[in-house]
Amino acid sequence: GQQLNQSPQSMFIQEGEDVSMNCTSSSIFNTWLWYKQDPGEGPVLLIALYKAGELTSNGRLTAQFGITRKDSFLNISASIPSDVGIYFCAGQLLTGGGNKLTFGTGTQLKVEL
Amino acid sequence: DGGITQSPKYLFRKEGQNVTLSCEQNLNHDAMYWYRQDPGQGLRLIYYSQIVNDFQKGDIAEGYSVSREKKESFPLTVTSAQKNPTAFYLCASSILGTSKSYEQYFGPGTRLTVT
Image 1 (tube, each protein chain N blue to C red):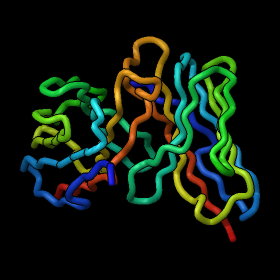
Image 2 (spheres, chains in turn green, brown; image 1 turned 90 degrees about the horizontal axis):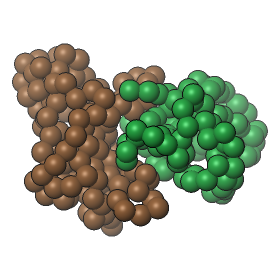
Image 3 (cartoon, helix red, strand yellow; image 1 turned 180 degrees about the vertical axis):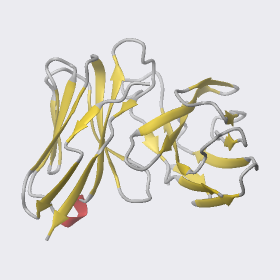
Image 4 (cartoon, one colour; image 1 turned 60 degrees about the vertical axis):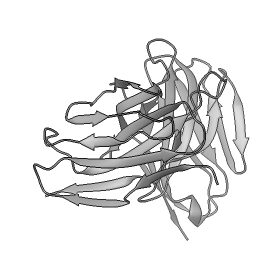
């Protein structure tokens, strides 16, 4: 099955910095989702995006559905230690995906105090 | 509290034994999913079910089996035919027929180790 290209693969940042990560594909997606996974736990849904160009916030997190429908972006402002974890993007393909999601390979975020 | 439960959290088995992982949800969701996660990789779909007594293979179904006898339950059996069963297994569910059909909610996972 197809996987989404997620970058960067890992990030090591200072507390208080802003963070940006993205997810790209050669295919067109109907829906984009962003999840966060803590070590040894299941992913938690952060933000869901349903329209091209849509910009949605959840506290310090902001995500955008790319205009081309082939990418999505997640920004975290003023990072704090509890932001540590792996962030996954997931998308629902415009054609052929059914209700299934395609997942990115994840961005591991580490925050230095 | 509504949610998805997976048990046990950790499971150890000898090679050649079948093992069944439990997944229960009380969210009244229609669809349920099983994923496998290996270090450094994204989630890969094993099986999914959109209705009781019906399920479909995902991308890596070989060596696995499922059943959906109740809406709330979707157990996964890892058979001895699965060549590399050691992994973190995640169950998820979603509601169907709404604008939020693609939002999948995950359980806490079961880490299976086969030696």
